[in-house]
Amino acid sequence: MSGGEPPGTGAPGLRAIGDFLLQESLRHSVRLLILISLGINRRLSFSELLELTSTSKGSLSHHLDQLVAAGYVESRMVFTLGGPRVRVEITAKGLAVYEDLARALGRLGAPAGRAASGSGPAAELSQG
Image 1 (cartoon, rainbow, N blue to C red):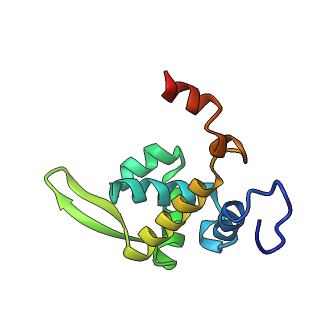
Image 2 (spheres, rainbow, N blue to C red):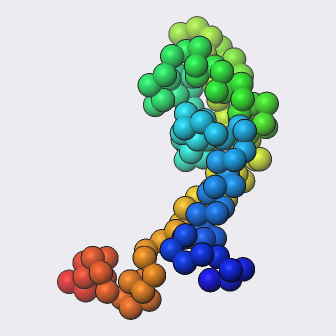
Image 3 (spheres, rainbow, N blue to C red):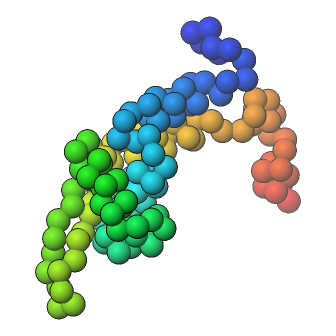
């Protein structure tokens, strides 16, 4: 471990995740879920996000307002044959944050020693 990180902390991946969660706009699990969902899908309707988050319309609107204010998502009204719909898209800034978060989660990885030795459940499955 570099930088005097305490053993067993999972740093630097865990530290990076903590840094994300300290951002005011990402402190709530619903906002993280929205950001991750849009990072994967790039664009979702308000109705799809409502179903994904299992929250109320007012609560979802509040969380989207927070993400819009941070510059992570854009929300716009589109007109369809079925009537007006709200479409939410991730911005380039939001996509960069999502990708950084995904990398930080990936750095958490397997416990020390297991990945390096090639042992453990994943190695057993790959060996037959």
